[in-house]
Each structure stands twice: as structure tokens, then as C-alpha cells.
Length: 168
Image (cartoon, rainbow, N blue to C red; front, side):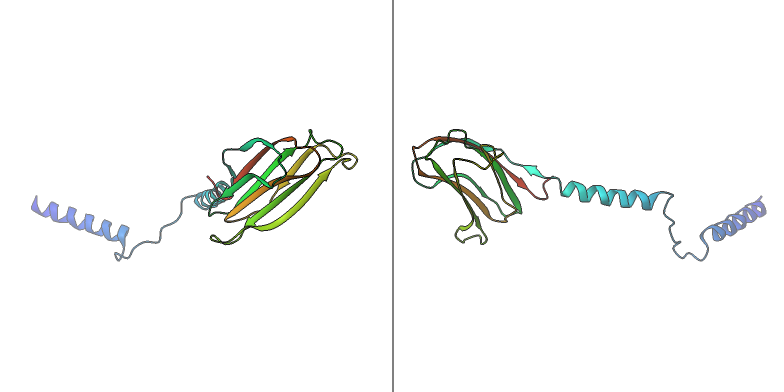
């Protein structure tokens, strides 16, 4: 019986050496479909990272008073965009409304004028009374102001969205 155990141990040892070899780590082979799945995960991750995230809308009504009034302002330390609309339905004959967009390119810096638009009647043919303001991107801050520079002071409705790049 003792002899049988020795033979059995020899057979197990030989089988172990055949399976393990020289005890060198074996090169792992990726399961079928692994590389395709890995690249799909990378694609999905890249798409998720670029899904735009919108913050709470900045909305309201401003009553023009002749001064430059801020209607939308962002402040964050990530790439973001500000886009929105101002309703000029109330604008009348002699009224003129100035819309300005400012950006800040240094955290402790001042706002710099980026765009300056003046609206008055008559609007161009085919143009509506809804003004679209869209800024292409900033890192620190964006500010939109309105100022009625001629005519009777009126109310103007607005709605802006801050879209953050890389939001999930």
C-alpha cells in the first residue's frame, strides 16, 4: 500500500510539472471579445465625460432704468458656456437696448468686454424679437448686462443656462 502511494505521488508530481512547467508565470491570454469590450468601455467613458451638465436656469425680468444691469453671471473654475435668450417683444419705436457680454480670464482679474450689441426697431427682415446670446466658453466667469440707452424704460424677460464641460 505504501508503494502505491509513492506511485500516486509520482504521477501527481509529473502531472503538476506538465501543467505548471518550470514554475514561470504563464502569459495570460485575453478572453475572446475582451479587447472589443475594453475599447467600447473607453468610448463610453469618453462620451460620458463630455455630456453637458446644465445648472439651474438664470431667469427673470429686468426693468430697464438707464444703467447697465447684470442679468446673468457665472463663476466657476471649470470650462463652461453661457447661452440664453432675451425677449425684446416690449421694445418700441425709439427704444434702444444695449446687450454686453464680459468674460474674466484671470481668477482675480477684472471683466473684459467680449461683445457689445445694440438693438432697435426696425429689426432686420425675418429677425424675431428673441435675442440669442451665446458665449463660446470661459474658465472663470461670464457676465451678461443690458442697458436701455434710448426711449422709455421697459421690462425684458430673459433665460440663460450655464453649461459645464465634462459634467457627469
